[in-house]
Length: 116
Image (tube, rainbow, N blue to C red; front, side, top):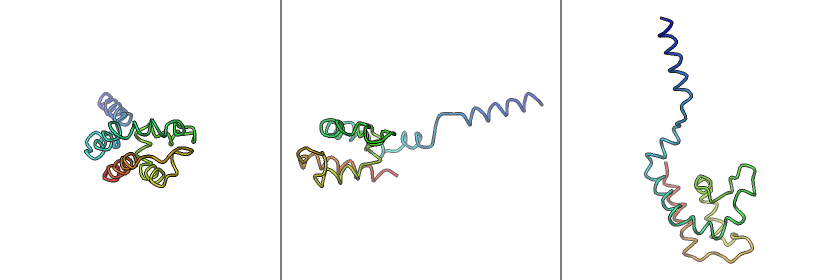
């Protein structure tokens, strides 16, 4: 009986300490997330690297939430990024982005908004 109890407790502990999360599982199986990730990596990241990273590489906050070279941060700030570039407020001290680049931010925002 002690062995069964011990195995049960060890099993519970192992399950509780597993490193998977619902968030990771959702992302692996979520087509909308994959679409946003692919668009970010293949289309938007180069625009961000060229126009945004010099200021938005984590220098504005302790938790690096404004590092838009990071996919998670870009997803969390998609509408804010679009609003800033569309209004011409960003890039700061630079020329307004081309309409084609602004459209890329809008397309990314739309993909992010489709993530459940």
